[in-house]
Every structure is written in structure tokens, then in C-alpha cells.
Image (cartoon, rainbow, N blue to C red):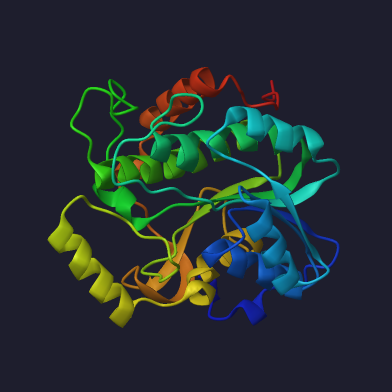
Length: 296
């Protein structure tokens, strides 16, 4: 089973091109920096151009930044239209968390809209230029979630911040599974993989809606979590490692810390019928579709 203990172990990335969403900080920045240090050209797809330029300055000449706001399908289209040439790795890393229900520019519940639908649209719009891997970053929060097709946008249920976050992260894995199925049906060599960082301290805070639980989680994070560089190892394994399409990479020690390896997603994340149904719903919501033709 492949294992990755340090970013220095990833293979040479000369001539490779990676697009990393949300790469101005945290795990996305750490992954982009590691790829650039091995020779890749990295495109930091970020919402805030100023923070993107600061990240480029920190990474060096092999990095550039372009604006991408995943909460706006118009911005996703603009980014995809402006990107030319082949892309070896698309790393769907950016994430949103909200303690109250918010909506995107297109009216989607913000966590589902940014974490899943924005990346779903971006992947479909770029797929004809991707040559190697689509990596989608999820979370262990997926394991307690479900997809509520009757209320994907949390319009009728009492809003649960952690429930909405978990649904979006489960959607990431179902997307990974269905994308891999479609790629294989089209005879494509591109692989769809996923990664979860374990317990990582990155400045990104998951809010459960329970103040006592959130305070306890914050204390645990300070005491036990690993940093962005270790949290990025599953992403780097999912992007550059010799692992099967559809795989989930995560920390090897109880899914929390340690070297990255291939791990097992929840049963809900492996439900092929739900994955297909979610894909169909996501196509309708984003008005994008899988661009490759299945083999006869």
C-alpha cells in the first residue's frame, strides 16, 4: 500500500501543471508549494487576488494566481474560459464553512454550493484539458452525513452547520466515485481520487452549532492536530501517487494523523445509485455536464 510520510518523497514534477483551488493558505498552499518545489507550474485559483499574490510571492517563480470564486458559477466559467493548455492535476481543495445558512450568488446553500457544486462545474468545464488526475478534498465529516435530495439547499429543514458541511463533504466523495465511473466508461486514463487531511490545524474552523462542542474541538485542535504540511500529504498522495482511481487518501493513524495512505470511505460514500443521482442533480443545478463520450 503506498504511503507518503513527507512531501519530499513525491516524484519529480517538472513539466507538470497543477490547478489548486483555495491555494492561498492552509492545505492548498502547502500542496501547491510542495508541487512547485518539485518543478511543477502551479496555478493558485483563489477568491482574493491580494492573498493569491502573497501566496505566489511565498512559493516563488513557478506559481501564478488567478481569480476564482466558487460561490459564483459565472466566475467558474470565466476561470475555465481563460485557462488554456493541458492541466495535469486539478486539485479541488477550497472549502467553505458557515455557522448560519447563507446562499451563493446562484442561490445555493453556501457549503453545498462552494464545496461541491462549484468544484463539480469547474471539473466538467476543464475535463477536456486534464491529463492525469482530478483530486477532490473531502473530510471525515462525510462519515456521519447523508444526501437529502428533497432538501439539498436546507430550505425546509432547521439549518445544521455541521450537517450541511457533512453533506457537502459526502457529496465530494460521491462525485469522486461517479466521475471515476464515467472516466472509465469513456476510456479515459484520467483518474478521479479524493483526500481528507485528518485532524489538521489550518485556520479553517468547522462549526457544529454547539458552542461547548466547538470550544472543546478548538482545544483539541491546538493540542493534537498536525499542521498544513502534514495535512497536505493525503492530497499529494492522491495527486502523484500510484493509487487506483476512486481511491480516498488519508492519514494512516486512525484517520487523524500520520503518513498518508489509501483509506476506506464510509458506506454511504460508496453508494453508486446515490452517486449517479447526485451527479444528475448537480448537472441540472450547474448547467454543466460530463464532456467525454462513453465508448460504444
